[in-house]
Image (cartoon, rainbow, N blue to C red; front, side, top):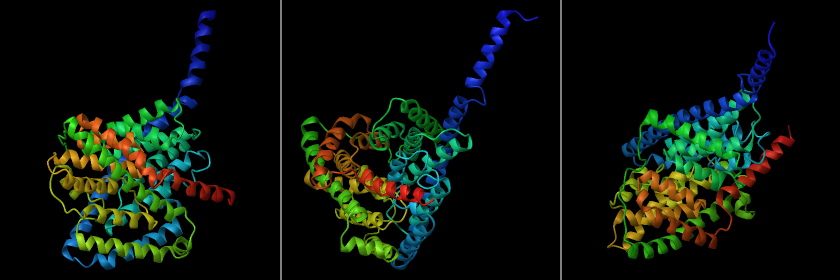
Length: 440
């Protein structure tokens, strides 16, 4: 005959098992987060490898036949636009606006905005874009597929899908894409979560740390652009950061304004673009091809010329406007692909222009200030911009001048575009997702 203490212990054990055991919601929620974050890290690494291979394949092709892109790139853009509209209408563009919109409808978006099948197709289409020379990056698509992976794992384990899961997935994607865990957390606060709730903290940090550990374990502790020992004395940093912030912020704000107008404005030109999306995409591809053939530097992410400028090497002064136009044409064409890496490259080119104004200052420092200013002007997330650039270049001792330039750029960008780019674009996806759900 069992004693009262034993019966009490058994009841407590059964209650604990129901609360935290393998069948409990708490256990399944933790398993979904940890398992999903591991998959995010692996997926980000696989995507990075495939994107790099596609970029190299196109460069070999363009080197072997300089004029071929004039045919290949426009046809590729047109084909990608047609496939996107026909098969995966929510796969177009960066992927970050889709995740921002998904946080508004977390229980209903699994079949459209962060559907895993659609996100995988977006990855394939982004790689195809790199194969035809599009000025796109993999970071935005990585955010979308990361959120889709976490959403699918939660669905498989029968765990309710919350907005915090989308935020955690997107943050983990940024961390794994650039090997920048702090930037992932900052990105979650500034971009993905319009009102950062306290209960998201553990989710975001856990997902970022786990995906980052997977990335470090598989790819090693690498610095995306290579370590740069940037330094400027205070009396030199102030004028450079101020001018970089004003001009870079306005340039980035102009890009955001043009990209938003192409997506949301209603006039004769945009009406024609929406009525003939495949033809318009082909025209954008022709512009990208013409710039690429003329310069040889604006294909894909333009990682190599950006790294050269960051390290203090020389590149043509016209690289910045050429990359600006190439990235804008790719962005408004509607094909899948991100603007993070191309915008960083454009920012490096803008910093290269500042070197002409400040010839006596250390080249790497001036380029980084121009880079953070332009990137902030585009995405309007100064903290994320500073941390991404400091982590991707190893310039952690240069963060104060970077922050000064970013804050000035954030203010000056509003001269051209008061609305933040990703949030403005997310409204379109949110409306389309609501319409898709209403028609089901």
